[in-house]
Length: 64
Image 1 (tube, rainbow, N blue to C red):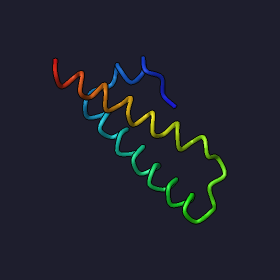
Image 2 (cartoon, rainbow, N blue to C red):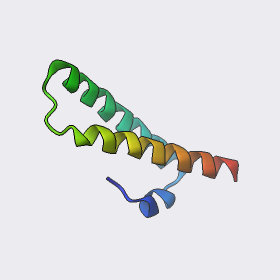
Image 3 (cartoon, helix red, strand yellow):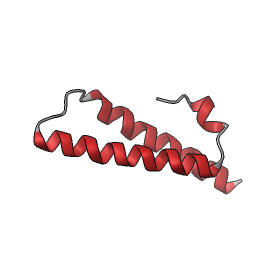
Image 4 (cartoon, rainbow, N blue to C red):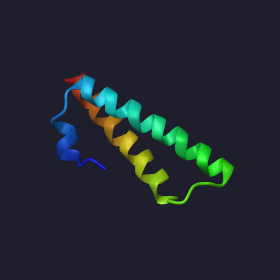
């Protein structure tokens, strides 16, 4: 997972790409969970928090 300091230095385009990547991973993790193939259940929480972190920074950068 990327650290908050690394996320803050990225541009809005880079943040959008990272957000899209995490949302795809979240979808794949949900699919694995539904089929019983999910091994690392903690990753679901990490991805969800990463999405929230990026969305927060995008909103902050857009407001200023």
